[in-house]
Amino acid sequence: MKKREKIPSTMTPEQQKTARWVMTALMVSMLLASLDQMIFSTALPTIVGELGGVDHMMWVITAYLLAETIMLPIYGKLGDLIGRKGLMIGALAIFLVGSVLGGLANSMLLLIIGRAVQGIGGGGLMILSQAIIADVIPARERGRYMGVMGGVFGLSAVLGPLLGGWFTEGPGWRWAFWMNLPLGAIAIGITLWMLRIPAKRVPFKWDYAGTFLAIIATTALVLFTTWGGSRYEWSDPIILGLIAAFVVAGVLLVFVELRAEDPLIPMGFFANRNFALTTAVGMVLGVTMFGVLGYLPTYLQMVHEINATEAGYMMIPMMVGMMGFSIWSGNRISSTGTYRMYPLVGMVVTVVALILFHSLSVDTTLWEIGLFLFLLGSGLGLAMQVLILIVQNTLPLAVVGSATAVNNYFRQIGASLGSALVGGLFVGNLEDLMAERIPPAMASLPPEAAAGAQMDSNSITPALIHQLPAPLREAFMGAYNDALTPVFLYVLPLIVFSFFLLLFVKHEPLRTTVEVEG
Image (cartoon, rainbow, N blue to C red):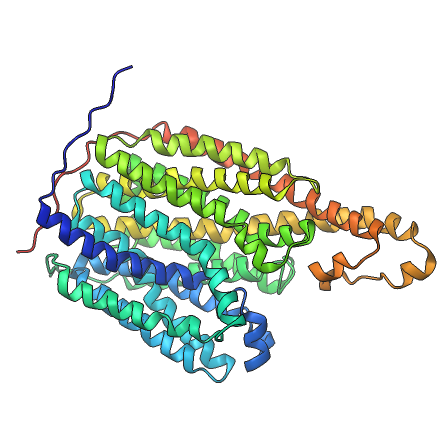
């Protein structure tokens, strides 16, 4: 077998030193933005108990996610037009202002405002961190750096809920805000000191119509996927109205962007084969990752009788797989200059993981579930950051910010749709199975035990399930297991389809140059 030759670095030692410093700031920025997507998920009951406003509880997470998603294409476009260094510092400053507002909040309204301000900054941190890499590191060298960035994203997916729980049970939930201040200050200092990228003054006419329609479509999407099946029934007029608004605004957005002089979301990107294919695959990965992550921790608590903190720890194998293979594949890409095989292998590993998840049963051990999670994380780690590298290497450097932003925007849409898709299928399955299995289990109990085991399906908790009589507990755990496992099989065709899409990605030599400061 022919051994693949290791290609020497194209960067000077001084460039490599600068790149390491810049990457420190970018990783901190990415960590801040991605951590805050989920850090309050475990703290919400405590926050509501202290501040009140239970009716507005979901807005603590939704406000951040909505503002962040809306800002992705805006920051990407602005970065291409006016340069990214000033924008990065501004985004960090906005994020820190939001953190101070949240940390000082004495009402739910002020907390939600702080979270929205954080999201406005967080959208910039998320997208500019990835785009600035293209400004300072040639595509030929970028694999190892983007691999580390992918590892940071995987770390935050697990660390967010764990840190939220730790702060809530320890020094207090407000420290989830206060911890951002020193980290953000470090990122600002390094950016000011070490980041040297060209300032831009590109003449442009801002796409106001496209921006307005993108905001409407994004807002409707995030709200109906967040509220549908939880706060409102899917048949509720509010949800149906939001879905209609999303569809109408989305269709109008396409028509407007096709005619815009300088579009916010250039439709011409999709004429590029590599961009169109990798963006479609990224969207599918968003569906898969967030669909699985959204319900697996609750599944572990309900079926395998562990508490919330232990369920959070069970996500660590996924983080290890995602970090390890993201970094490994990035290093291999930088060493060999080839990249097409890694997403393909990632899709195969993800298919295997989903098949194994489909085989879950009440008797599956936690060690086995940990192995399945490791495999899923490994598949995602081999694919996710490589797709962004392909996008950045395919399109001109002048539009790398917009291209990266649009790619991330559709991945975020996939994440929202994945949560809604998995949630809808799971809840529907669970209602049917409970209607089928719970009455016979109740009938098997002595009358006095049955009278004490009446349940409201809307208020079922892990603690309640584990206190039920054995026949009823086993019936519910079996129904919960059998409601979730088919969902993994429903997602499987999307991953298989993505594998075939990736076969048509054209390998283009990785660039060895970047823009230099003039």
